[in-house]
Length: 253
Image (cartoon, rainbow, N blue to C red; front, side, top):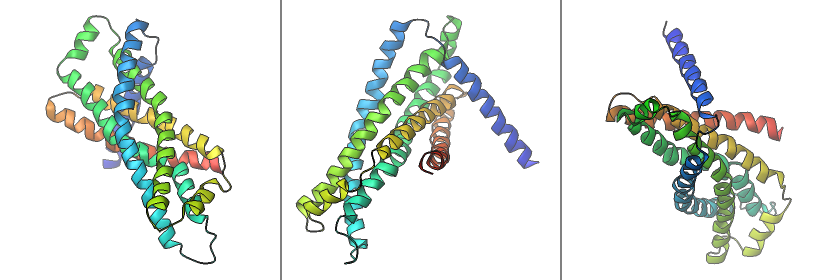
């Protein structure tokens, strides 16, 4: 009985999500308003996310370099292995998957709480009364902005993470700069960068659309807005991990 209830709830959410997305992805009524909202979302979701992306990436790059070097101190291993492992870890997983999981907490909760607050304060109802497609007006700029900004954030994360590892070579005796630079250049596969960017596009769409869905259907009061934000972050994270597994099998096998 419980399984039937869970499955019914799951299909209801999927159906509501698909119907909402069908309303979102329509031509805007006024392109000027769309681009005005889009510019605001670029700043809110992209530029304001830069500090946390840079801080986390530089420390992760440094930590990966130190831990890899300390745990592979084998004379049989080549000296470039530390830089190689750091580079591939940043490119394949951290700068796309882990970074998106982090941004799901920041950007996703912000989107869900913003739209949820508009729902419980009846601002969305007012838009509907005026004949405005509220889903398209509110959600499309957010999804578009985050999907366009995410590859830029990923590339910046890759570069800053590698700089973090370089700083370890510069300011400590854990690894030499020459060995680190040799490692990050050795057997470089350009497709790994594209693989990470493609994944980030999918993850950005998941974060923005799922968070918007939970915010859009948040009815009640302030407590429901908090629940919507939590549900948005949790479900976005689960979907990111699922699609990470799926895309890895499709693109790297």
